[in-house]
Length: 287
Ligand SMILES: [Zn+2]
Image (tube, rainbow, N blue to C red; front, side, top):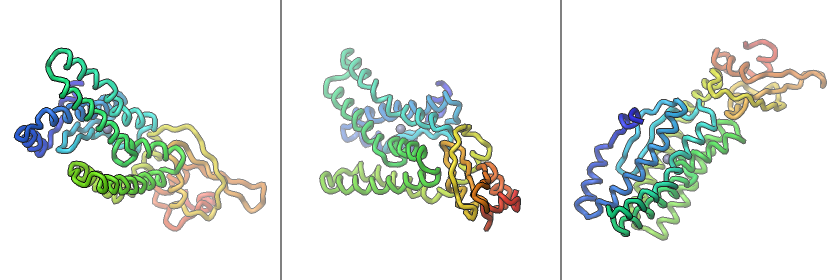
């Protein structure tokens, strides 16, 4: 825990926002939001530390916070899910803190109502199924269970864009002067764009984690497939939640060849994949 406090980083612009809050009479509002966001991010950070993940920092940004932890790609899905929901779950006990402060007379019922309002707002906003909010991460974890890794990741980003577009249109039509919302959604859009650009790099990290078997999944998913499928396309069919086993029909109907995902990964990381197919692995042309 002490280790975690050493990792707290405060963005310089954050102090400007606190200063503006102080001069415009919104100091308690700013303090309330910062406190709630801080506890939320600590929730992610503590559960990541429990699983032995590397926690780079807990950052307090001008418009929110972020717990920078290890990349999700090479972590088991159940750990990803627990680390993700450990943030939103903090909002369930936080109202108790406000009740206690109310009873001790540290603050009044107006502060208390404000605390409950922001606590609920931050929880609901974080659970929107938009990447990289917690709801978006949960969406990706669910999609990853049923779709190949790359497809799940691509769909998460596309659905996030669509949902952000719908939400922004709604806000624009109903609350056109909500500046905070548009600043935050701008940050979200930049984040989605950056992850879209980097998705090939993420995919290679995923393949590497599969090759090193760091996810450690034992479930095997078997499927029949054409032997002339390219190795590159076969890599895009790999799941995070299971190991893939491809069955290729031979010349005669009772001849079936099996190719494990490790054979395909070996071909890729040995640099023997360009223009090659699963038949080449089956026939020993690539090893
Ligand atoms: Zn969170």
